[in-house]
Length: 289
Image (tube, helix red, strand yellow):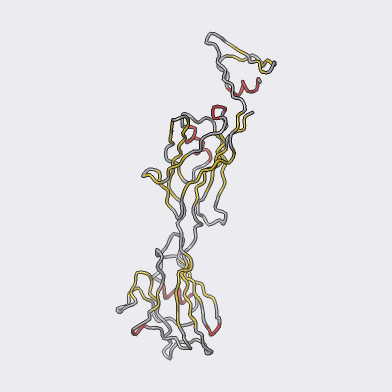
């Protein structure tokens, strides 16, 4: 009985998400938030800018209730092309929240917007303990990219594939493995691991070792995704390999046909199979038994 080994190769990464910066106005008194008599509320400084004078990468004066559109206009040129702004509120005391959403793959590397707190550009919002705060509410991630190698080690011999693309087809994985001398006839099925449909590129391949020459419990494939010619990039990008089903082979029989025989037949458990010509493929031999 031959129960083929199945090993699963997983190209994993974190979900591919936008970076989001959130700015909020708030107060803890009984009176509503408002701008000063000149319509001034606060000034924001983008990452890489300066809150000291002269201000660098700073917005114009912002009101406590800017719309998503006017906030976007104020940040234009300070944020990456393709950014978006959404607004929530009003909440208690006429406070608001704005989400500044960067396009995918764009990130400020852990920095966020800052509020000018001193000098002539300090917060001018009115209301008890009125203030503004900006936080990095979601860090942007990078989707998986690059190449990896697979290595098969058996009986002290080791072989490695050429670099394999992170998004290879089933046929490409089959060809890469079958190019190794010690691996014969694999069947590959695959599925996406991007369960939230973020476009991360996370994927996995299920490799069935279908040949009798690879019968039984096989050593686990090894992987390399950090060398110069086989390197993955992306947030949390990595390759993991597990044994999904252990191969089992109760009996493996080797038949040697004499060199001077033109044909042969095999008798197993008292039953003789059909006569086959010398050089018949394994599939004909299996059918004859």
